[in-house]
View (cartoon, rainbow, N blue to C red):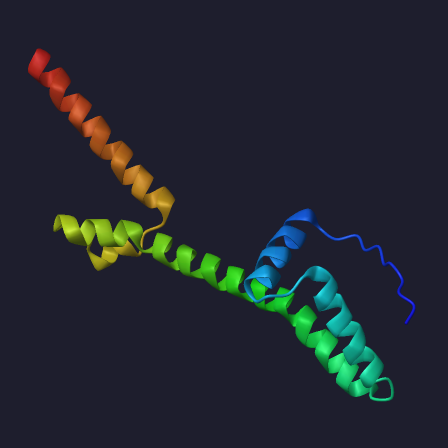
Length: 126
């Protein structure tokens, strides 16, 4: 049997991770490539089987993307409730009217409260 050498370009991090996983299951990178090429040779006439296997390998990228998307969405959901949770833990309640106000309206109220406080301190000084 004649052997040939193949050269493949692959991301270094993926290679390191893949080599580690293969070693854990008792395979070398060469053994894994030979197994894939043997599968291809055995299924030469069955394009559907080949495409199915290759797509299943590529779908891991889609799965990783989906898991990352779900992780970020969950973090966003937790973050969006952090302020409400902090108020609740502190025993502070927010009226329905205040909860429905825009940020600009809340800032106007805070500014007015601040001015009232400063006015009260000026009157004390007089």
